[in-house]
Amino acid sequence: MGLLNFRKSTFKHGVHPPEHKEETNGLPIRQFPFAPLIILPMAQHIGAPSQIVVREGQEVVRGQLLAKAGGYVSVPLHAPISGTVRKIANVPTISGKMSLGIFLEAFPASSQEVMDGTPIDLETATAEEILKGIQDAGIVGLGGAAFPTHVKLKVPEGKKCDVLMINGIECEPYLTTDHRVMLEQAEDIFVGIRYLLKATGAERAIIGIEANKQDAAGLLESKIPEGDPVTVKVVPVKYPQGSEKMLITSVLGREVPSGGLPIDVNVVVVNVATTAEIGRLLPHGRGIQERVVTITGPGVKKKGNYLIPIGTPLRYVLDQVGVDEQVSEVYMGGPMMGVAVSNLDISIVKGTSGIVVFTDKDVKKTEKVYPCIKCGACVDACPISLNPSKLGILAKFEAYERMAEEFNLMDCFECGSCSYVCPSHIPLVQYFRLSKSIVRKRNTTKQAT
Image (cartoon, rainbow, N blue to C red):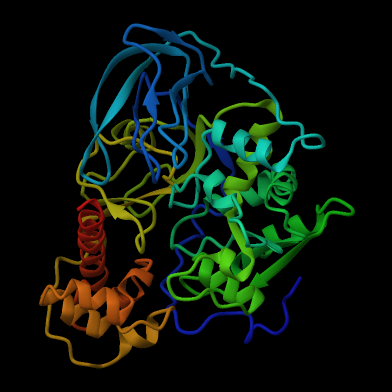
């Protein structure tokens, strides 16, 4: 199972934040109650928002198409519950921007059975038909990025995929979603891998798992179907090993070039929960209506891993699990790469992998930001060998073009390792996030003129 040779099976740098996984990694996935009102934003994936195909007052059944894909880099949206479309209006999202959304009121006595669509037959389907089936199912990366999966799987002309990497690392503190999926949905994962191998043309698949999930690694290795070209590789625990570029380096020793993608080194990486959804939905032609979410943190009373309908309001979720009166911060995602929410009226979306709640006593009050002392801790921590100290100084002076052109700002994937180790409490990752958005905006403006 690749347990030996740990020293070589990892990437340079990185950090070791406390894991905090023990409170939920042993708790099985449970079905979450259906909220009386589901609120579905159309912009819940990278790319063009979904386009609504239902009207106010219309009754829909669970699994029915509510919105079609708004283009190639887009996916449709399906009804997570049977109910009535109460209104179509703008709704808040975690980004702070408003998005057009559907308010769906549940039928109180519905059994919430799911509609089947047109199955994708694994034996007869072509690679293109599988990609179309994945798009039609509304599947996006469930690890948090929410990038449309069919786009990621499309191997560009002139490129070749020889390894399909299944990402079961889940290095983000507190989150145990992927861990439970690996323990409880092994069959779906292997069916999903078969679809993915055919879609990408890869010769073999490797499931990468961190050493703190030995039970999942052992179980999956014991259940590999006979004759399937699948292996399990255990790698040492280190953050941010779950980043696809880091995982490729750890497992295969290949380095994705600056500005490049995994396919540049003949690899496609897919999250393990996304793989399980492909294996679960495509044989029935269904769309995704729910996902597993870890709800945890010191402020949560009923911690656990829950199967939650997409569109469930965050306020309803917190009411159901119970939270401490002294709640200070609520994160969607984990504390390293997640986002602290400013509004409890947002919804669970396809990319929501976790909800972590902290109380007043767990959160340090905003510490004073001191000048950079040139200690180099951020340089030692950065997994892609950027110079966060230099980038931080340039961000302060708004030298965004120089950051991008001379210091590879756009390679930063905002893991937060630099901010985590900075003794001066400089919010480096926030600077970089803002700087990247300004660079993208300027580039878009340049292209338009």
